[in-house]
Length: 349
Image (cartoon, rainbow, N blue to C red; front, side, top):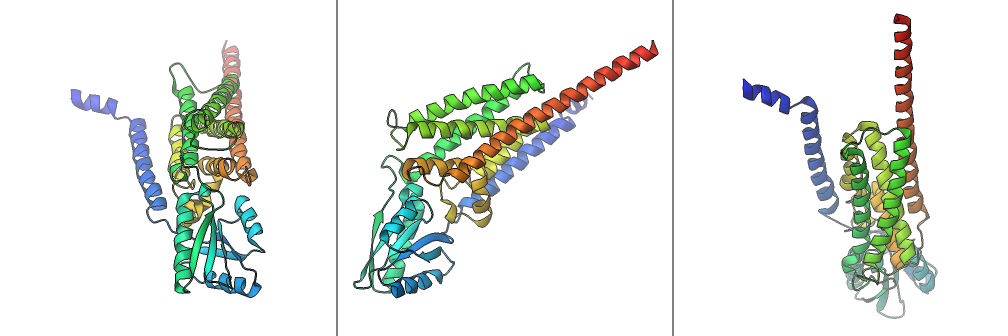
């Protein structure tokens, strides 16, 4: 009986539910990562077609649009200069310049946006031109740094900031002596999260920059600011989830950021190579938005970052509002019970 009693005390319904939750996270982690990354293929990649002869450009566009599996989403571009500008503006991921007077075409790519995608476009263009007895030379208009293997440094940098955000928020809530936050304590936690985010942003930018690793080019201060925003947005949304659900909020943060966010971020494989579900959710989650901005800062002169910065800011604002609102409502409810108890004692006496 002693073992049975000990078992009942150890295996509480709450403990069992937490273990089941962890198992669910484990299986979702496997399904999400393997589902997103096990069979990457380019799909509807924004792609320019250029030729000094309009008819040749239109013919090439039609040919590329009919490729099996629809790997490209081709559109005619006015000239090579326009194609280069659109690549740097991140409106297209590559362009084919067709020479109707010769047999050698030119492919423009941007490995800074993901070397895997650039290589896939080169392979595809070589195969297409080969069928027409033509050759292709490749020009990288936004090359990844030689110290940035496969263009992954931006992704790992953002993952580090995300990890710092949700771990720090988790520690604030579960550390010894902590309890569900009052409005004042919630504000203190948010302020502390902001300080941690600033230090983390500066530290991450320092590590990947020329001062230490030299893994990423681009503005030190722009990357530092991005790091602060990523860390703060992840931290505040974790605080909000913990205010709403208690310790379960940590698991929900892991589900949102790690299980859903990391494989859909476009890190290992850029967004056009991910399956539809992950391609759709990636830009709206902090890891995906952060990775896009980091690559833009490093290789694309900071172009096309407004949407992603707004996404990160929205997560931060949502986290702040929910954290303070839940803490305030709980405080109001607690005060109401206290006043009601006092009134009841007064009537009884």
